[in-house]
Image (cartoon, rainbow over all chains, first blue to last red; front, side):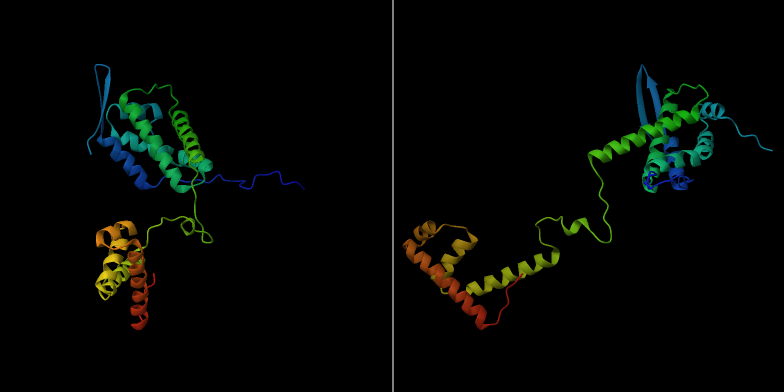
Length: 47
Length: 193
């Protein structure tokens, strides 16, 4: 019978981002400061 | 029983400066978003990178006040991730990534023409030994050999500089090489790289 299914059939796998990735994002958020002034946006990362 | 705040409330709290709200949002959607990215890219490291890039965009948009709340936080985040996945595949198409295996290492066929450290040391040692051997040659032969090899002078220039004919310069060079070989053989010196 002809092979009609893809080789990688079931790639549904429950995965979670690593805690380090989440920590990095939280740290990034804390240090990021965005200021709007007279229509101009200034991004500062106070790290 | 603890009630979990809805996405719109968490988003609003975060915009108002509550960093804890972001942590709740990330943890709430972590598995769903990460699994979605992984199902497309099938690589754990790339999944982490796209997950981070997605939330960096989310954070920037929310902090800029550019987020338009319509009660659809998760679909919006998924859309950002989806676009980043497409970017990833586009970039890889332009610049395909090669992964070596146990059977084949790309560096076995790719390399620069520079000597490795060991060969470089051997080369330097040979050059040093050769300099000592040249010192053993008669003065006229040594002079021609040094001008030719180390100063890269033509035989015409050597002849002019030493006040001899080109044929004499060529002859001296020939005898210099013959004598060098003799010294090497006589002393059982190995000059290889």
